[in-house]
Image 1 (cartoon, rainbow, N blue to C red):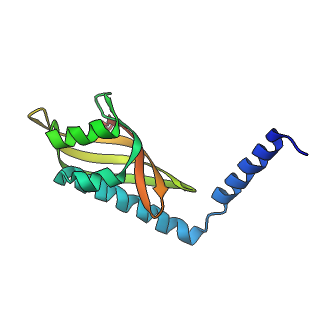
Image 2: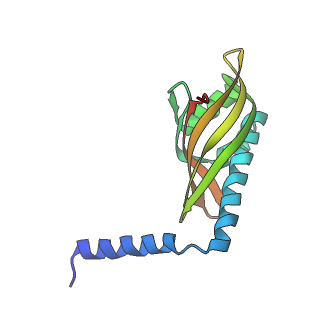
Image 3: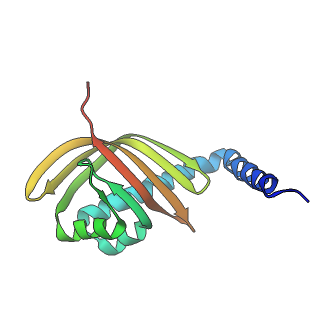
Length: 151
């Protein structure tokens, strides 16, 4: 009988192989689905569609704003509902999507237009997003962004 370490190693190897051998034609479709989910989330934030937004966010969400503040899913939904941050537009660019099984990592830039505590701001952010696939949809697990200025 083999030990627990051997069984865990085999499980880890099987998981890695399942990620490595992703069908290349399917990879593009997965990336498109991840970006469609991001589009839907940005749209729901702008339209203050809390029901849609709720379904696009993982219950264990860790949302880091450019200010450094971090919110849970409930706190982020409250921020949108209260209009403490009122998102007017978000336009992404220079995006890279990497899918690892049921996890997607998205990096890129986004031009943001928002009202924060009554004052309007327009700026560019560099973001890192982690989402996970639940059945056929993608849910945001983690978001981190910083203000971006070109050198």
